[in-house]
Image (cartoon, rainbow, N blue to C red; front, side, top):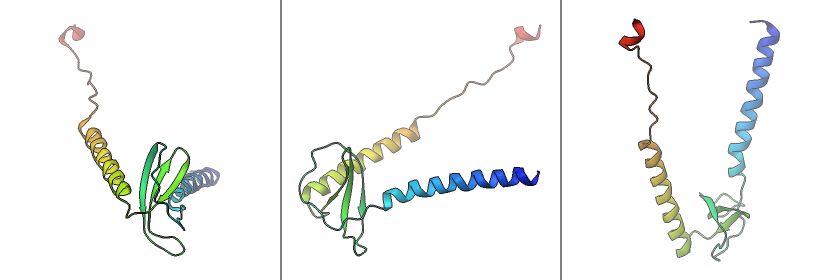
Length: 114
């Protein structure tokens, strides 16, 4: 491989690594300094439980169509919503594991050999 091809490959690999790291850190960048006990009335697309790391407090972060919402982890409605979302995640995970794609293999038939 020529030197310029190696450099191009390394540059492309570095670029994609940076993109992957920034996307992974995007979720981690949410820091709840205060939490709400109010129910969320917009569609929830995901959640994560965030541990307390000052200045961030322990919270359940719900990802909604309006952005991240920090909710108090001890609220009953929060516990129920997390349980519901985890159940849905488990169902989806099982569905993906059961669903398989079968690719038919080409075989030579006796009539094609004539």
